[in-house]
Length: 49
Image 1 (cartoon, one colour):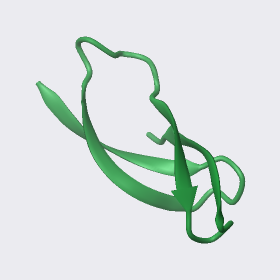
Image 2 (cartoon, rainbow, N blue to C red):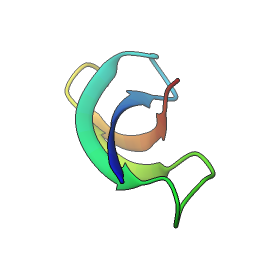
Image 3 (cartoon, one colour):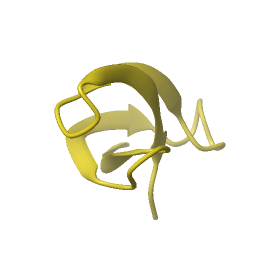
Image 4 (cartoon, rainbow, N blue to C red):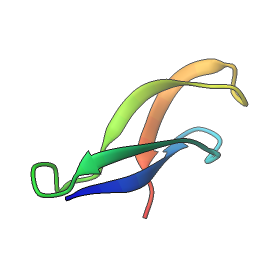
């Protein structure tokens, strides 16, 4: 049931993180505040398709 997803920075659009989520419980796109090594700041990272 858990599916692998990729998180991309909203500022620079680089794909920085890979994680998993349960698509049955969370069908919408995941958004997390994480550190981006390219922007050198904590930014919002959103799930990509």
